[in-house]
Image (cartoon, rainbow, N blue to C red; front, side, top):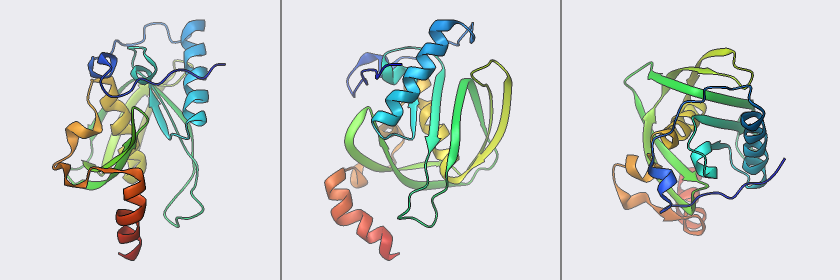
Length: 179
């Protein structure tokens, strides 16, 4: 396994639509998935899409570890979504903070559907159907956006909340804790 170079804002690969994976079991696809998982973990991300590592394919990996500082945080097992399709379950949107490994050191508030249905294939090529809500739904939508060339900045209603991570910790996180 290898840690891959992460594309950052400005790289055209982040703005291109991706191609479906045709042969999920191909050794190079399985190696890419392993490398994406290792890269996501190395950079302490909770999700990573193939375009972020310079591959224009419809693959995302997601893994969320519980945050001991938050009573709302839960662990989610490693999830690999190949050729995913998402459908909103509700019209309800929730605005919350997002960051991105491809836009280092920045965060902003982004509206996302509260609950979605996902149809995809897992890394073994088996059909996968799941319903996701709240934060897990947000992460899936964020990673799915990478597959269409969309970044979280494109989804922000206003750039007023766009902030560097240090300033987020200094001003915004404190405000969120008080609420």
